Length: 268
Image (cartoon, rainbow, N blue to C red; front, side, top):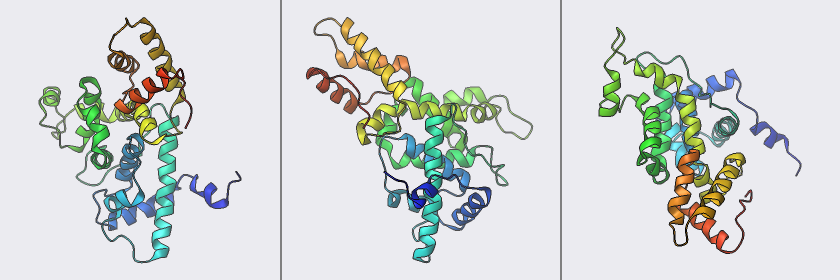
């Protein structure tokens, strides 16, 4: 299929002046996502999650309930948003680790705080998929390390133990580590949710190498499983070993396909 100038344009990353313009428009709105840095965090969470939300579901979080004065303004802003959405999607799939777009920060804000606030908004917009990660001991700590940058988790006991040492300005030293590892943690969340995205929306932008590793590991585990053994538990154990969160829908479809003699993961 031939690409059109419009589709090609939507794949172009925003330039500095365009990012500044979008940042100003977001700041003038009345949404929970307060600037371009927070927008970057929001899109990273939405693109990592299993559900594919429509623009109308998250646009009020960015621009407020009545964001545009005219249709022309709406189209111009949506194009900018779509271009950055596509850029974040490519970055999540290609960068290892992911590089979050962190600004120097507004007066009174902490490094990474706005980005994490945007990510938090994205997590809360599709809670069902993220709740599984929250409840997992290892993966939950990784997500909490991201969300702790919002400043809202500072009283959590497991984090507070690491925050005894502080800088002269009172900022906990643990924040330096959290900011430094932010990109790696975001990449881990993206990869953990890859099977869930495939099960829920047939995401074509998944890391097929991870899926191949998962497929091979599951095949070996099920071959060694005694008759009558717990197949679901065996599959989850493979996912844990590879660092991939395997959702119920994915396991169900896999076992159904396996019962029919077809265990290959096709790109869809």
